[in-house]
Length: 339
Image (cartoon, rainbow, N blue to C red; front, side, top):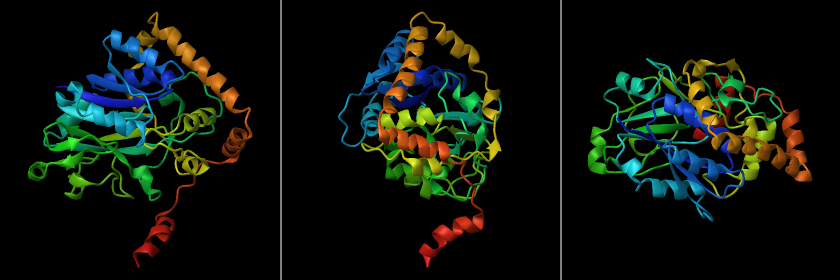
């Protein structure tokens, strides 16, 4: 079975080896990775990984009027690693598949849901947990405080990525879900959420988030680490967003994602450290990784020479973990608009 993950990256070389090792251990057989306008050696690291047979690297230089990720997904839809795959899963570098069944791999998940033509992997947001300085340590081991499984606000916390069977039912890839459905094939769709519940037909066409206030993580969740250390978040804003050509990574973005209400170390049940250590031991990848770590520290120091970056840094240092709203509080936000 061929399971292809599609990834779009810029200036994220320091996180590549952990992400790749985890998803190889999780059952991904092929990686199609697009890089754009890198300053930290991400593209050089991807070239080496391609030479080692780990992935296929495609350069995706700007400008991108619609955002680099959309440009990459258009190319990916025509690439043999996608067209010849059995299953396809577009992901971001801060998203880690966390399967809770069997041997914790995607094939084990598919065995539990044999009828599925698509499975929605709903985010579980992992907050900053007070980590200020960027360090060369595993993301999944460092950030273990998360939102509760049942969250009533914001709706963005319930966004999902879609593991989709490549059976010709959709003509295009999307950031969160496949696009351009083939109408005559929709009757055969069998979508399930991450708790194994059959999803209604609305999900076959346009939904991008799971039902709010419902636990969709029983069989699988998508660990989402959108913040990281405070210093790393500044570099994320500096890098820019993959979907949009503009920014948007401000204190409001931080507030809506900095949930630290519960501890969740479940992802550590999948062993991937051996694969990661083997990659770092490579004579080329090891130095490239260390160069990327040094680049991040230097870039942060450079940003802090400007008042606008010092201001954002101060705002984030002063902020507390995001408070989880009750169901009644959340309904007070959206229910008045239904009258």
